[in-house]
Image 1 (cartoon, one colour):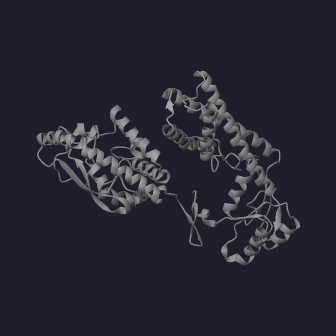
Image 2: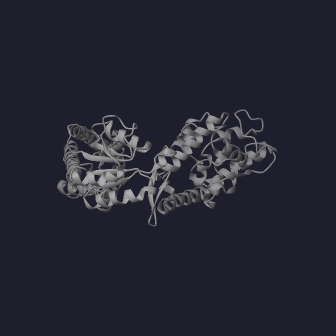
Length: 468
């Protein structure tokens, strides 16, 4: 096992070294193409600039930038890791260029440099991964594994390790009370779990990892195995039985000294992420409410008053974060009616005013919700808030519907920019919206929020046929 770990450390260092060589080679090539200059107009020599770029790249990649050495990793994961780590690299370089008074030669040239760099690094790493897979397929750089137990999770684990010979795992056999037909015939039955320590002793140095799925009630058999592994450089892994009823990715956490498995990771549970999101909401809502909104309010308010009697604002109770009710504000686009809290708007809804179609098509009716954002009831981006009747109805019809209330509702959301906006005539349409809302909660990033806002504006300008 120590040899495998050392090999992987050397491998990561080798990959990063290759990245650095490619980075500096591209700097030199682009500098030559642009008249002995790199993508920046420098007040320092090119070699000093190379050293600065190399340092920035290492800072962004040395800890978690390389994952291609892992036993099981998909090509798209390698590509996404390169793209993800390139973002802070670009921001740091641009920040330092401002501090040290570098001036961009041309934004197009600068953009071209980073696009080419990403393509080159991804191509290099995918090629490296392919060579590593061939190396492991030949039987090198592998982890020798023993399994203890045979429940459903262990079967899936076995196939994950053995179906792809390039994964880097070699299963030596399994321990179980009796030979199990859950494993293929070609995997060796090594005996009962109480015999595992004896087997490990006889095969000292020939086992790297042990995976155990015995229930906690059999701790008298598990503890000696753990102790032996800990004292003989064998990595011990416990495989819980929860996958028997939860067929999804789970996340391990520690609550004090107690291990806990959570069924989803929510980035907005972290205080720093909530601070970033809330700060952005406050700044944007204040800027809008203090600049454009008064003008829009006068123009739209007059049009609403002229088109039909009633208030300028329409307010309705909606379901918010943690199921709390709040008053959601909109510009009134319909005549005052008794069905406003029970009947969803339709494409040819007779309740709409003369100005109503226009302000709904252009999303102008949603702009008063910036007040909700400033108050803290809503966010700029999040699952759209539904009327109370819909929450009551769909929470009984759609599994996991209430998960979307773990975060603040938004003026716009991932579901709305991916084709699930407007009237939900069929149940599958609401199910699709809920699935995308949950995806957003599990994958939130600040960059994702910015992208959703961009897509919202783009759809408004282009015209959204679902907006009515």
